[in-house]
Length: 283
Image (cartoon, rainbow, N blue to C red; front, top):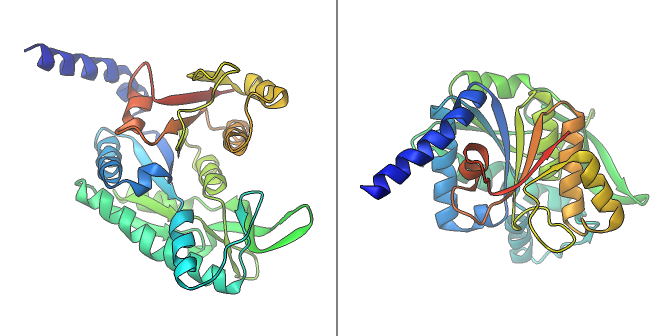
């Protein structure tokens, strides 16, 4: 009986969050361990369906870097990175489109549908949805790597309003119609801003933002996060994720989350419990 009462207590804890976020759009960047672990993948699909059925509007933007890397390795093509961005020539871009827009996108659609929901796969190049320009790093030409200029939210809204979960591959297109590889965090942030989303959730392979002693920071304001970057407390790969979150806050999204995707049901824990499963960033 106690275990049943505990389950009821969890539902009661979640109730005010369900009420608050009903009808709101939540953009989830899906990648990392949450994508590569079969058990986590299955629970992710079920979690997204639960969000949908209790009245939220989940939108998934996914990565797929490791899958692209493995395919390139099989083809005997070496990957080169500059500041974490894959140098993308025409041949590499063909692989990116095949893997992200094809295999990975279809697998995520299947996860949602296996969880009892309905999903439709999109790429950012569909209808020119994600418009980009070529990204340069320290004036180095990275090939077909895109920087997001704008997102047309109408195709995403049409899919969501029809009752489906949109699953978006981060492939952009420039004004000449040339496709580009886009960083998934950046794409997710731009999609969240275009949809006036309530939340952006970045699934990661770490607990969240840490303080100077290595402890998890469960909630932090953007101004404090900037200070920790300057001081060097936030460093390395966490910097671009925090900067992505701060960018969407500036773009009008009320909250952004960096969530430990290695935890089963991390999304539900972060949205519907007091403790959460990562770091909440606010204005």
